[in-house]
Image (cartoon, rainbow, N blue to C red; front, side):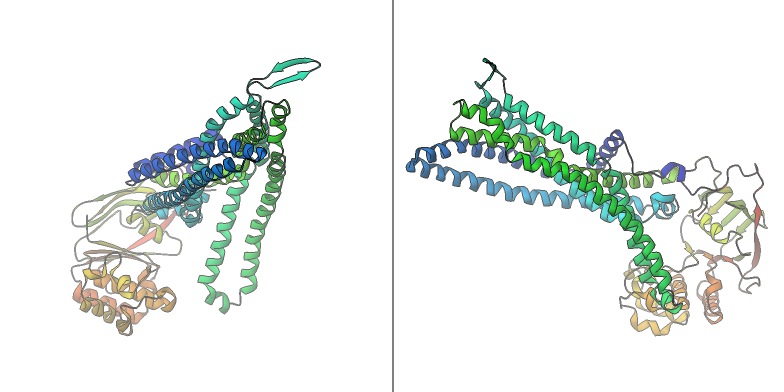
Length: 591
């Protein structure tokens, strides 16, 4: 079986080791630092550090407030009680401001992270040739929209929430361990008449308690990483199938294919449901650990602090202060327990986004051991010197060993079915490098026209001007191009934005693409079998316009039509030769 480009190099599974996750995270950090928004991120991070630190200090003060407040209640001391209420109002007001500030900083961090990651993926994906190459690179190139949009959004949101949460938990842990250690001082235990002291016993109790729960959560929640990755892949498959049916609903209705399409959707959805069922089972198992831990946590701090209280080493207020400190410590330690499923989700999205980005950055280097067609931009001519395009069945070759096209010359290359016409076009456009030979192209003024017209979003004026802005051309130029291609009825709709790929018929769409050619007036044009789809009327109109208005334009057309057009000066044949073992080295990738 012939591999697709990069199958061996770029395909990746959901499973990954912790070291792989660390490397992917380090690559993400490097990308963020290299972006132009790095300084703004640093300011946001600094703001979060200050706010979280101030929040931790205020929570320590709030915990210390418990002792005098509840002791005043125990003594029925109304003045002290009222005074402590005033203290509480100041602490709570400070915490309110800090909480609102942290919320704003969290949201801004998510926004900035998503902006950086998404724009970086846009840039990597839409670098020259990469979108085409990654689409033919195996599983890694399936549904890139899922990885660029949904996975990137999920990754940035989880990274912010988990990162801030981990920092906050660590800061509170360090702060309250000291409080808990001091409250444990002087507490002795009596066993069979012997007294002994365990320094900081409440700290060790919290560590042991949270450590056991974290270990259990890690063991039970580990399968969620792979399941989440598979879940995202299946969701993207279902969404892609729905979009495909929606975009082709007219064809489905004409062929009465609703039942077959529904069967296909049911099959894709069954695969999603199977993953969701396994995800439900794994999440339920994790819930036994997290929920059980949560319920026992209600009484655990009281049980741990009770010996000191009953021994008379703690007042009632001191008991509540110890309970609060223990709760803060074990909540910080149980951060992993509470976020086990989110961590698994984060690892899955990190791997999907980072692997996709790695594939994009390495796609230009895949299959280096295959022979490649040399393409240089030089001179004022098109030259194909001993060009052979490698294909899975063999090699596609021209009848002329050397083909040289001078300015104003028109040449047509004719090939039969499956002779490699589109692959030759892609090779000349630099999209299919696998083969042998040498190609020379002019450095500028070359337009490539694929066999299927591409209509970008926007108005007809935008479509005709693509990839330039409409103000590059005058109104008269737009009108003349449409009229020349027999599309005068579209002149009045030049500034109308609509889904033109649905509004226009196939001949009109192809005519629009050639109207774009007449508007741009390139010096050189390479056409992939698009002439064959034009109506005889449109073809004659195009040839007349090229003769009159673009007489100096060189045309290299690839055609599957047996007869020749009198428009062309020369005809060259294209043939496919079966692969001779050992002649071409490794077999070519397949599309």
